[in-house]
Length: 518
Image 1 (cartoon, rainbow, N blue to C red):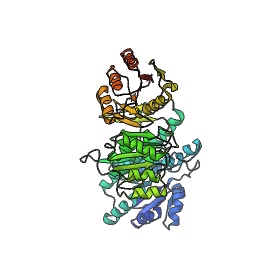
Image 2: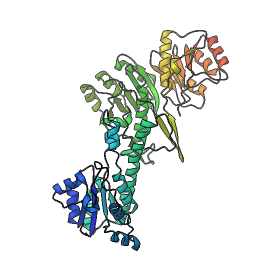
Image 3: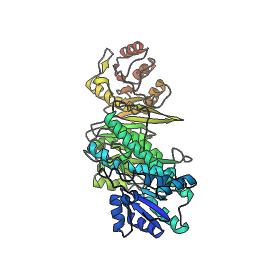
Image 4: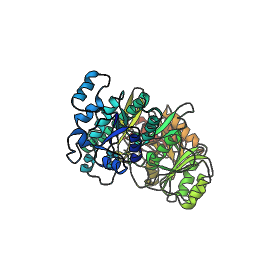
C-alpha cells in the first residue's frame, strides 16, 4: 500500500451519498481503503480505492464476516500519535496511520422488523467489524475522525474545504455520536435476543433501553420546560409512537401524553367506542353500535371538561361524528381511518391535530413492561393488562346485579383501570356519567363523581379502582341512587361495607383485582 498524507477507511451498508463523499475526500488528498461492495461503489464513481485485501495482505473470508478485523487496520486506527513508541511500532510493521473511519452498520433493526424474519437472517445482520471499527476510531478521537451517518458527510467536507482538516471539536462530537450509535445498536440486538432466549426473565439484571428522537417539542408540560419525543423504533405496538399526523398544529408534550391515555383506554373495547381524555383522565367514555351515538353519550358525561380534550375512536370516523367533534374546541382526534367527507369536515379546523392509527379496533398490544423515571433510577413493572382473574366475579351482596347492571359494571371496570387513583366511575347505559379521579381519599372521589354527573347518577352503577376502606362510600352511593357497585374487595372493613350494601339493597361485586394508577 502506497504512503499517503491522509488515509480514510470506508465500509458502509447504507451507500447514500457515498460517491460524492468519496470524490470529496479524494480531492482533499485522502487515500481510501475500502471493502467489498463499498469498494465497488466507490470505484464506479471514478475514485481510486485500495482494496482491504491489499491493505492487510489477507483476503476477506467467511462470507465477509472477517474483513477489517486485522492488526494492520486496528493498529492504524488506535495508534496514539503523541507516543513515539506507538508510531515506531506501526512503522516497524509497515502499517499506515488511518485518519478517518467511515462506517455505518448492517441493518439489524430493519431486518427484525420484516414480517416472518428468520432467526438466521437476524443473526447474519449482527455487525461485528463495523462496531469494532467505530469504537476504535471514537476512542482515538484525538487523531481520528469517525463518520457513522451520511448526514455527517456535508459537515466533514465543509471543514476539509475550509481548514484542510477536521477540527478537534468536530472529532469529539463525532466520537460521542459514534458511541451513541453503537450503544443503541447493541441494545437493539440485546433486547431481541433476550426476547428470543430469555423471555422468562421479565426483569434482566442489566436493563438497556434505546429510543430514537422523532422530533423536538415546543416545550414540555410547562412553557419553561424543554422537551423532545423519542420512539421505540422496533416496536410494532398499537400506540401513539406509531400514529401518523394527517393535519393540524405541531403536536405537543401534553398532546402526546393525553393521546397515549386515550389510545390505551379505547383499545379496551371491542364494540365501537369513543374516549375523551383531559389531563390523562377520561372525562367521557361510551360504546354504541353507532359511533356518532357513542360520541354523543361520551361527550354528555362532562362536556365542560371536554374543552381542549383528546378524542380517540376505535372505528372509522364518519361525517356525523366529525361534525360533533368540530362543534367544540379539542386538541386531537385519533382514529383507525376517516371517511373522505369526515376528513374534509375535520380539516376545516385549522389547528385540530388529526392522527391516523390504523390498528385501533383491530390489534391488541402484547403484554410488556412500562417504565417510570424517578430521580436517579427507574421503576419498571409489567403493564396492567389484567381485568379479572380468570374472568371471575364474586357477588358478595344479597341482591345479584341484573344483566344490564352487570354490563355497565364491567364497562365501568375497564374505565377505572385507566383513571388516576383514587378513581370512581359512574356508568349508565354503557356510558360514563360521572368521574372522580386522582383524589387523595376515596370518599372525595365518590362525591366528585356524583357532583360531575349533574343528576344523571340516579340508576347508575359505580366502579371503584380499589377497595372501600369504610362504608361511607356505599352510604353516599345509596343516597345518590346508585344501584350496583363493582370493586376489588380486600379491605379489613369488607364485612361492614357488604352489610351497608345489603341495607341499601345495592348489588355488590368483588373482582379481587386492583387497578391503582399513579
